[in-house]
Length: 90
Image (tube, rainbow, N blue to C red):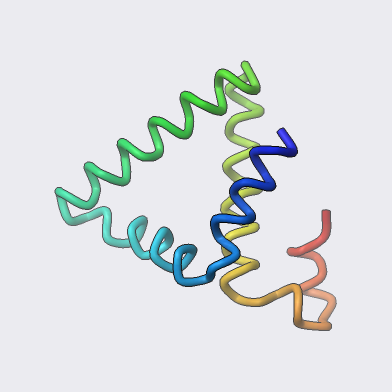
């Protein structure tokens, strides 16, 4: 699981890619975009189900990942405030 986390962290280290992924989620109301985003999520879920084997663990993985994405895009690791530290703590 650590390898998957590291690979994703390397991918989104470029904040432009991370912002693009977040924009794609927001633009999913557009039929072609929504279809592509859903296919991407389907593949990710299938992969994580193979690795984790438990639907609850998959949901937790995605929930933590979504929080990590928001924290990264907002630069919360660089904010020395208690609320930001709550969201970036592991």
